[in-house]
Structures are given as C-alpha cells and as structure tokens.
Length: 200
Image (cartoon, rainbow, N blue to C red; front, top):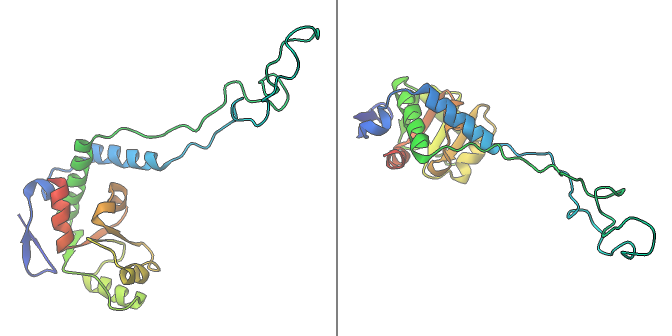
C-alpha cells in the first residue's frame, strides 16, 4: 500500500503494519498495562532490619529475671520495626511482545484510515521559535498533535514545548498512550520506515 507525503508524492509501506484490523480490546489492554507500569507503590514501613540500632544484646541471656531479648529493635519494643512491614507493591501487568506490536499496528492502521496520520518530509524549524512551529502545524491543519521523527532536535523541542496539546517523540520512545491521546500524528517519511521495521 502507499501513503502520500505532504499530500503529493507517495511512499510504499507494508499492509501488515498499516492496514491491520482495529482491535479495541487489545489496544485497551496494552494502554492500561502501560499506564499501570508507570505507577509506583508508595506504602512502605520499616522492618526490624531497616530500623537503626539494636546491634547489642540489651542484657545477658540468664540471671536477670527478665524475658530474653536479643535486640532493642524487636517489633514488641518501642521504636522497633514493624512485624509484617508493608513494602511498595508493583502494579506491572505482563504484556508480551506480540500483543504490544499488534496493538501498535492496530493504532497506526486506524490513524491512517481516519486521516489522522500525516506524513511529511520534515517539520524541523530553523530557529527555536514557537511561531514557526505554529505556522507549520497550521499548514497541515492540525492542532492537537504528536510529532514523530527519527530524532527530535533542540530547535524542534524548544519550538513546540509551549504549544498546548502538542508533543514530540522520536521513534524509539513512541508508546501507545502517546498515540491514542493525540488527535493527530505528524510523522516524517524517514520515521515511518523505522516504524514499519519495528512493527513487521
């Protein structure tokens, strides 16, 4: 199949990567797993091994009339460690590589079918000016957009960071959440070839 670049010339891409069926349940599962992986467990308590001190035996084993004690940081002592100390939990959900690639193919295919995938030669700007980037996006008639290139240079980053609902990623840092949260994806012809290799 072919995709037009800048509305004129066309480049050939594989049917497998950009003409897959829309699998909403798979996309949902992968997006939820990706978001869950970004979460961090915050509940944590100190066990007896985490509490400082307690290295010396408080008193000798026999002859004092008191109960045996090996450390002053026992859970039954004041300022001792917790008996079953809480540990940060992991929210990670397992997603295998085949599922991830399938979801990415489905997302890119749907973006292309809906006319939300815009392939351009380049969206680099000569100077780090927001106005220049706004003009480039207005020529494509897009506002809420994800810019994807093989490499995001400094001028591009500085030009787009103040524009609301616009983000920029290189191909290696692409993820399903970034793709589904933007209305449009503006990608360079060079980057779409790398995406094709990743999804093949």
